[in-house]
Structure formats: C-alpha cells, structure tokens
Image 1 (tube, rainbow, N blue to C red):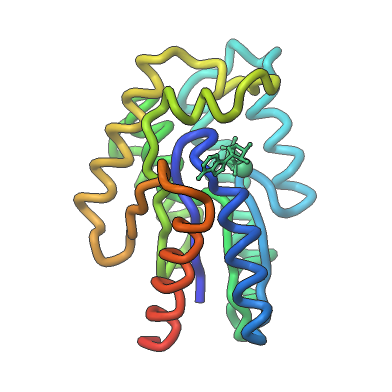
Image 2 (cartoon, rainbow, N blue to C red; image 1 turned 180 degrees about the vertical axis):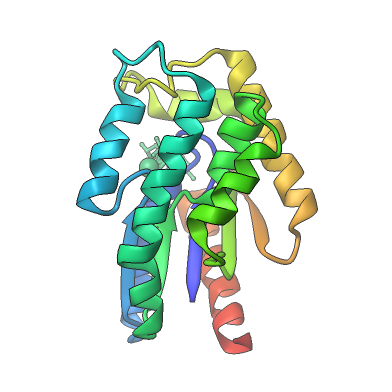
Length: 203
Ligand SMILES: Nc1ncnc2c1ncn2[C@@H]1O[C@H](COP(=O)(O)OP(=O)(O)OP(=O)(O)O)[C@@H](O)[C@H]1O
Ligand SMILES: [Mg+2]
C-alpha cells in the first residue's frame, strides 16, 4: 500500500506521518517512510538545488522538471521496490504537490501532470491524506523557522497552491481524503488511522 501526505507548509504532515508510522508498526506492519523532494541520495541533491534561496533565477519549468526528476529516482529506487516486497510506503508529499505548487502556484497548468505521468510510470498512491489548513495558520505554526525558496513565495502564490489542493480534492475524491487540520494532533491522528485501516482491509 502506498500512502501520501499532502497539504501546505505547517499543516502537520510530518507530525501525522510519525504518528501513523508508529500506529502501523504497533499493528505489525512493515512501514517505509520517505519524503519529497528527496528520499534517495540523488533526489536529496536535487532537493538542495530546488530549495536553495540563491536560486532565485530558476524558471518555473526548470523547477517542475527538477521535482519530476527527483520523483522519478525515488519511485524507481525506493517506492516500487518496497511495494513489491509488500511493505507500506508513506511519502511526505508526492505528485499532488507538483500539481498544486507548480501547476497552480506557478501557473504551469496541465504540463505538470504530463511530465509527472512519465516520471511516476503508473506508481500512483492508493490513498492520499490531505491536511487541509489555511495558509496563514500553517505559517503561524511554522513561526520563525528559516524559510526555503518555495516557502518565501508571496501570499498570492500560496493562495493559488491552496486553490490547487481544492481542485485536486474535488477531482480525485476516491483517492484523496481531506482532513480538517485545524483539529488537535490526536483527533487528526485517530481519523487518519481509521481511514488507513479501512483502506488496508479493503485492499
Ligand atoms: N494539529 C495541530 N495543532 C497545532 N499544532 C500542530 C498540529 N499539527 C502540527 N502542529 C505543529 O505545527 C508545526 C508544523 O507541523 P509539521 O512540521 O508536522 O508540519 P508539516 O506539514 O510537516 O510542515 P512542512 O511543510 O514545513 O514540512 C509543528 O511545530 C507542529 O508541532
Ligand atoms: Mg514536514
């Protein structure tokens, strides 16, 4: 089973992934955690290029292709092999982030989905948990932490990203489960665990 977590900065992805991993391991499942962009040595190097604040001149197309390149490596080196071994893979961000950030945020549109279909070669998540939180609350949670190149983007950019996530939620209702991320950490964790267990039993 392949599970991805999505949502804006500070929506609680890392917090909830750690909780879900613990809950699944207690039940005896073999869990592999990974993240995007990154998750392999090559993909982590691409991550440094993408997030580097000195790379202000990066064009949106370059950015989208770098995310897709990092993803292509992760899918082939980590995700597909783990799934073939029957393990549960949980990935912090995946394809939907590219659609929201590059497709909507950078306004590249459908091109983003096209290059990513090539990158993922059919490896789509079975379930995507979308932690839904308005961008201002996410920013407040992150507080004074140093921002990377994408986090430094304008409010208008982050509003378009939020619109992208709304579009995804509407268009992929079977795959994407939206959870109100303004609730307490424990409430959210319980909802996610219930949804994942239901999906595991269904598969
Ligand atoms: N439900 C919640 N209520 C209040 N605070 C929360 C909640 N979930 C997480 N937080 C806090 O908000 C901050 C951001 O959470 P977290 O790092 O899990 O988000 P994230 O989505 O992984 O962020 P990023 O996109 O930056 O990786 C952390 O300090 C975390 O403890
Ligand atoms: Mg995180």
